[in-house]
Length: 208
Image (cartoon, rainbow, N blue to C red; front, side):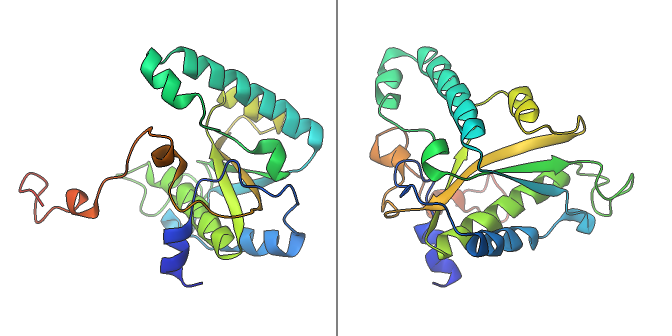
């Protein structure tokens, strides 16, 4: 699979996990790809916490389920009806969680390239997530990014030091298939934008 095929095939996986664990050799290749991401000042501000303990997975899944209900109940009725059938996580089904964390102090007090845009630190960590996701897709391994959680809960759950922030819980595991259409489009939550609407020439206001 070439890089363009992996980009086109990549999906945010929820319901397609086989229930088998990704083997350690494949998992290490995926993490190695993530660790090779570009980072501002070569600071490599990420770490990867691999979670497979069933009780920890269950505790996090229960927390996410509560947050899902809170979100649904805050929606207007018509949006709640659209949201209701959308599965938002595969925490226990995947059998493996990877928590990607960000250490803003990594690289010392002066990080080359971050002086005027401090957010480039966390951008670097997100690039590691993208590398991980594409590598997993090339291995026919699914990834689902879970974002329905309270940050302090997750930090306590995996015993993070105070200065390290969790950026993502990724459900990682072999899949039956990758959906041809992303879930949020299939269920009518939101359609994607065509590329022509996103490309601007010379200035933003000049149009596409």
